[in-house]
Image (tube, rainbow, N blue to C red; front, side, top):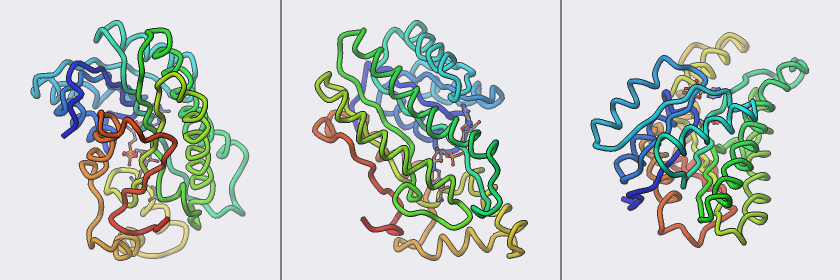
Length: 260
Ligand SMILES: NC(=O)C1=CN([C@@H]2O[C@H](COP(=O)(O)OP(=O)(O)OC[C@H]3O[C@@H](n4cnc5c(N)ncnc54)[C@H](O)[C@@H]3O)[C@@H](O)[C@H]2O)C=CC1
Ligand SMILES: CC(=O)C(C)=O
């Protein structure tokens, strides 16, 4: 367990799924948490779970694809919780389509969220850490699809390759300010994103519902699907002091699925 007592962490996409798991884990590690999501409906429940752990939580509705909204979320976190030390750029969306059928507006939408959203999170968090005059940790959501391009997930995969590139470049640009930038690369986590991926594979290719998910899970060496808690354990380490000498890495946490 990382000791991040007294720190403030902002987690995007924390209304559900992996982001919720990360927010709860960082709260157990001692941090106060700013919960940010485009959907308001689940944020209050996650905030209540964090408060039940004895930590402070604040919520903010923002679209990470909009730079001004990301800036406002950071302002809110800092003023509501009295600090800002860890930025988790977790929010992202999937797109399931053969490359032959992808249209410009679909590419723009996913790049705006997965790539630009991560860039604004990196850029604005780093600027705020520098303004506050202290070090900071930036942690981005990558994927196995940031290390290997997947059929039917081609554009999605390309956004996660971009996240890996941004993570490396940002690590180099911000190292002299004491800011580390890393990413976590999950495999197959049974969240709503995978419900959508499985359903779209079924609709577009005619395979039975559940088959695509089962096929991916069968490829996992450790023999089970991943949970948000599995991912959160790595993020906890990246947020804590034991990873202080690690930067620019996009670390696979997939139970043994993609080997790099
Ligand atoms: N589920 C999986 O197997 C994997 C997920 N990932 C990545 O992990 C991250 C989280 O994924 P999941 O929890 O599975 O997804 P999810 O779909 O269950 O949850 C995503 C959350 O992000 C929020 N969100 C979406 N667009 C947003 C925006 N523009 N601004 C703010 N919030 C927004 C949603 O409202 C939702 O609460 C994503 O970046 C995803 O690409 C990576 C590898 C595997
Ligand atoms: C959702 C995701 O990143 C994959 C490839 O499972």
